[in-house]
Length: 214
Image (cartoon, rainbow, N blue to C red; front, top):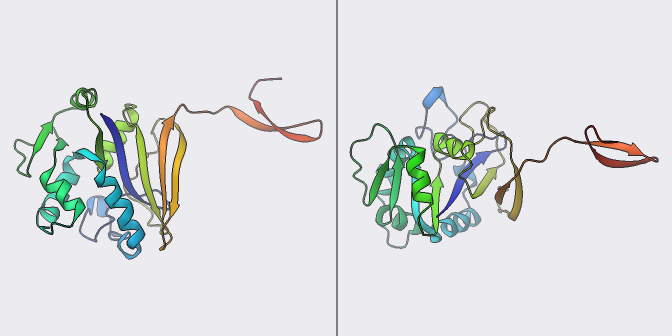
């Protein structure tokens, strides 16, 4: 399966609490709900497009606990997101959960379990939110694609998709789109990190050289 990570971000890289003030107040986060004013039709089309490609959903324990009560209450048959989350396969990574009661949910205990699942035949295993899990997957090199919506707002401190100690990576952009409300959507493929180059002047013109090269 391909692991794809789907995240809403502020301009300063925060992914915590996009949907409401009480969604995730961990660490004293008080700026929740920053995404909602920008949730226009274009944004809705992007998110529905994500879930139309889903074979299974992979969530961290905290995000699973936040999403279950909200989405399990949505019974609208035309709501694509609710249909996938309530009726589709879900996996939650947790060392503490003993029972998962939200439809077809399987508990995974470790990244090794995620690796085994990724190695099976299938389509997209989609991660939504789940800051801690997304960070761990990035560090382990298990993410095949990032789909990110960055909103024109800054909030300061909060959980970030890429922590300050995250391993470096480069990315190939395969899709970009601006929503009517000013959010930027990109799809990115992780690639090997390219560093160690500098701008130099050669024969009066700017050029790019590798550090240490002559």
